[in-house]
Image (tube, rainbow, N blue to C red; front, side, top):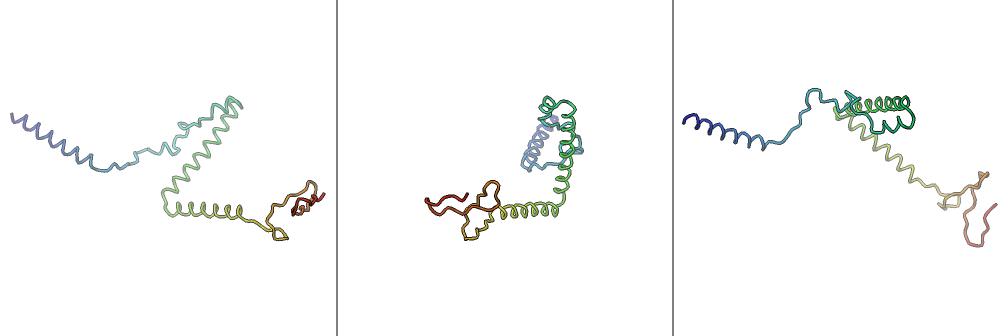
Length: 144
């Protein structure tokens, strides 16, 4: 009887410990050698388009294309991994992206008025470097 009581007590203890364990949040720990996804073994992550390139351009061109792809992919993954380790470099990277987007947005929105103050698009005639004058009415004939 004492053995059955001990088993019951141990089962209750296991249940209570299991409840405590289940109530804790799941925290991911990177396993030893867990960098395989980030480019340690690039041969496992062959591109899905490899067979298409081989069937179109041949095995040699396909092998060269895949080698170039894997080299660039590995370098970019290593760069990203280094960025993620250093918060300051990550902020510098995001700031430089923001600045580049602001520069490109500013260049797209820039409108320069014509000499008469109009912002009508300038259309150039073929073989001429002089812009045509904007048409002001239906009776005006185009400049030739």
